[in-house]
Length: 387
Image (cartoon, rainbow, N blue to C red; front, side, top):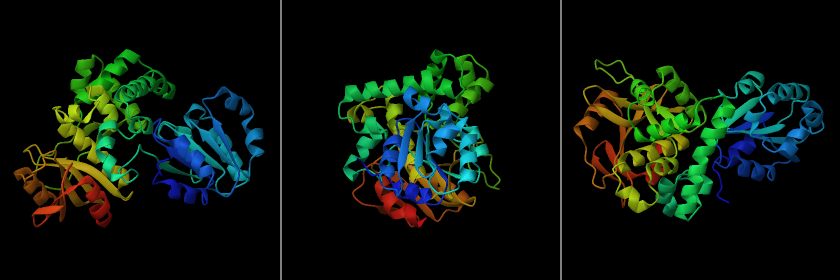
């Protein structure tokens, strides 16, 4: 089992809060992690999978069943299937408030599990479990993580055909079952087409009107699709950063499929050779770096991109309290150079720490006084903690 970096944090939260929620996409490893944590905490636990009829029957009278286990840690998996349990949990917590009463797992964010945020306010802490990150695997497997994606079933599978079949099944299940269950009722064929359209504009500025025309639906419908995909952890809309400078700034977000394995599946890429020969390799690497950095960075840090209509651009900008602290260019080239655009963005943003992250590099080096070229692993291990 690969040790998840959030393990100690979740155990700590269970020792302080009545309820802890592990949220994240399906198949990211939430169940495996929760069952492992159950062996490490100092109380008995009961696990219920809300997708299994046998476990659902146990909750026909949830108050009576859960009250009998008031001194245990009750693990409720796929909680988004039974949102009516949240008010019941609130009542039980208020009658017997002790740490670690509930560990709930959900494949949707709090905005789609609206009742959780309303019912358990002040009683619950949320932790997002992403697919594997580079801090959780061996350094020799980083390129495999980029190619295969971070979902455990995909990353750990060594057979290309089996991995491709799993990825296709993952996409189909989300489109045909999970998103409709969360409330996105629409044509599965249309949603599948839209999902593939998103892969085709990976890393580009989002143009809702263009997507609307291509799919033959309203802009409102496109925004609804995007909201559900984002709140289900499938896509990321990276927002532009604004400053009080006299420039015309791009106002629309960039759009990314969050897992590069799923992206590669949609693009028909299944091996390292195919990836390195593919025209999309640059945006694939950019997507991978952005997701890894956001997953690992401090929670008081924010991530943006920066672009002006004049062409000045920064792929990834990190800020604290709205103040730029580091700008990052993400390059597939093994011999990156300082560009005019990067020079202008550093001048605009006034960042003292600036980086170019490349996939392969023997060691980090400076190409100017304030720009460092480095591998992603070096950046997250040696530079990101100091920013």
